[in-house]
Image (cartoon, rainbow, N blue to C red; front, side, top):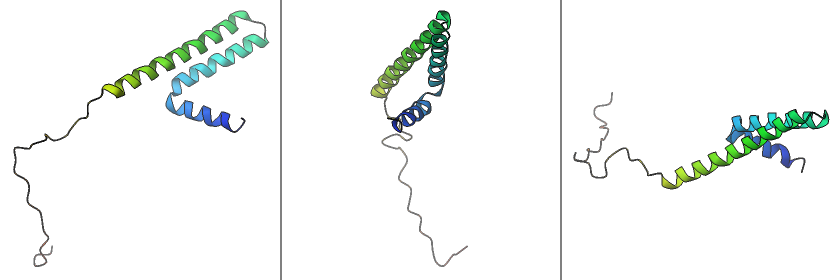
Length: 96
């Protein structure tokens, strides 16, 4: 479990660094508020963690929806009106 925890944190920070930072700050506030018997700080921390988790799931749903409806973009039209370009051959007679 100890080796798995840093790997989970690294992947979370790579995917969404801002949301992971918000969740971390909220968790620290909740721990400090719980240890120091400050209910307002504990509530603020838990609220921040909850908002961060909800934001993460909303972004996850939106990105999943956008990937499903994306249409591939083509740089050239499928049937070009120009004729095909000739193949360039390097002549051994005219070396630069």
